[in-house]
Length: 396
Image (tube, rainbow, N blue to C red):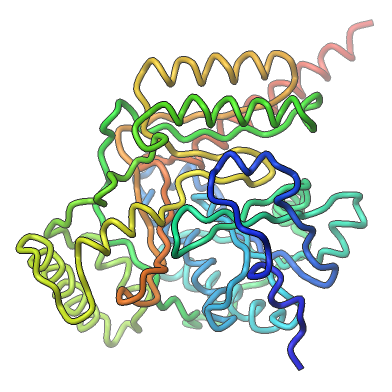
C-alpha cells in the first residue's frame, strides 16, 4: 500500500506570485520519515576559474535528474544551487536514491572530472537539532512548480555533508545513473538590461523574523521594476542557434562510451531540426518550436528561496545600485549576510523528460560562476566576521 506521505509535495497549496516566498502560511513541514538528498561540487570555484562552469552546472543538475528518475519521475521537492542540489525524498525511496547518488557521484568523477560530495540526511536528525525543513510550492507557469525551503534544516544538512557526516559513497567504476532528460543545448544568454547578477542573501543574527522577510520583499520589489521581474530569458525564449557544444555534455549523460558518437549525432540532428522548425515556423506532429521556447522561458527557475533568497537576474545599473544599497544596509544591521556576483550572461541547464510535454524544467545560473561565486563571497564575509570576533575577544 502506498504511503500517503509520498504525495506530500503534490498536495501542497500552490502560490503563483514569487512574493509568496515570505508568507509562512505557504509552507508545510516535511514528514518526519523523509530524508534530504544533498550534493555539491568540491572546490567548485576553482573549477569555474578554470573555465569549467558548464560542467559544474551539469553536475548540480545531474543530481536532480538522477534522483527524480530513480523515483520514477515523481513530484518531489528539490532546489538547484548551481554547483549542487538538494532533493527531499520519502522513506520509501531511500534505497533507490542512495544507489542513484552513488552512481551520479561516480559519473561526475569519470565524465566531468569533478569531485562530488553526496549525503542522505534523515529529517529525524534535522529536528533533533531543533531545526526544521518547511516546503512551499511556487508555480511560475501552468506547467511546472518549484520547491521553496525554509526552517534552517536544509542549510544544516549541507554543512553536515561538508563535515563528512551522512555520506553516500561513490559506486563502483563505470556505474552510471539514469540521467534521462538532462541537457545543456543552449548558448549563454546575454544580458539585455545591463548585467546578469547572482545574489544570495541569508539571515544573520537579527534576521530570523520579520526584518529578513521585509528585506526579501524589498529586493523582489526592486527587481520587479525591471522588464519581466529581471528574468534573464526573453519572454519568447532563447533563439535557437546551430551550436553543438552542449551535445558533448548531454551525450556523456545519456549514452555509454561505445554508443556515444551515435548519441552525439542524434543530438546534433535534433538541434538542426529545432533550428529549422523555429526559423520557418513549421510544426512537427505535436511539437511547436515557438511554444516550446516560450514555455522554456516561463518554466525557468531564476529565483528561489532556500533558507535564504537566491536570484540570478538581469538588471540595469540603477536597479542594481538600489539592490546593493538595501543589502548593505540590512547587513550593517545584522539582518542578513549576502554575496553577489556579476557577469554578462546567464547559463541554462535543462531537465526535459520529453519535449512533447510542456512540463520541462530549466535551471538558470550566471554564466561565469553565478551562485557558486556569490556563495564564495558570502563565505569570505562570514570568515572575516568570525576572525574579527575572535580578534576582539583576545583584547584584554
